[in-house]
Length: 395
Image (cartoon, rainbow, N blue to C red):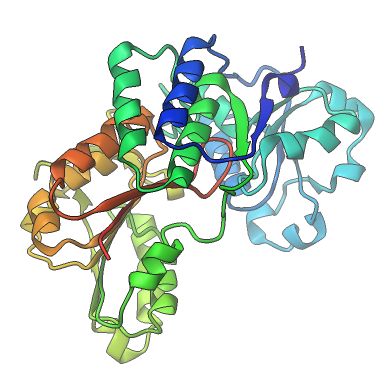
């Protein structure tokens, strides 16, 4: 069977209440595991030359996996990007039938459902296609990028934990998105709920967040990367804010972040603080794999040591915390429980980098901040099992 046939599609019309969601959870848990990992066992091509395609190319270069060519519907524009200099970039119609038969095609587009992407490609002759992250799952001993993780069998305590989280959400859309997330990572099925669409444009800034933001906010951006969330925050508050603390341990990312900050007007720049450390639940240096752009992260076989600070030791008074640190989000929040309980900021954190997002991370936060008046929502902002964000809302 061709790889493209191994991702099934399921459409559901209505987001489930807690009882219906737990029924669907038990169905997912009882079914045979449907996920897989894929090694590159033939010539490799990439579909998509956007941010994920670039990450995939960098990943392959680091592992010594040759990328034969890249496909993008807007290949003519993409060829102008210096990043792709020397790489064959083609539109789908420009690929020869023999190449479609001989190559493995890694799908590197996260803003469109996978099954919708591969259907026309299959009709045009492609026979072996996989999501890019199923490849990364096969090389976890050599590279820390891990968004292609698979759940495997669920123990009873895990099912119970997921059920508790489903009951704890504030709305049915959260339960729909959480089940969609689980179905991908356990069954490798693409579930879609008609009344809970995936919005790929508002990550960290769903309506509950933007409606709550005032003009005296202080943002603590953990995993600031090149400053995209800082920029989005400034836009949403009309550049009226108290302070921004941008935490970024990766030297290359922080240099790009500094360029953005230096271009701000003097008054704004004086209130933006770039911090060269990582965050965790203990102030102890840790191994870190740097130089991986989006994927830089804590890693046992990392190439350097970074300083780690607890949020509670920073002495800050944030009103909005965003956390995206490649799987170490729970660790960071557990180092900031006192700060969050004291100041009750809005909190948004990514939970898709490892299986902690299935229940351990949201359940731990629901328990740690019980009595603080938080409501909890879960939203997917991307496809292929990524872009999952947990929201702690109190306004």
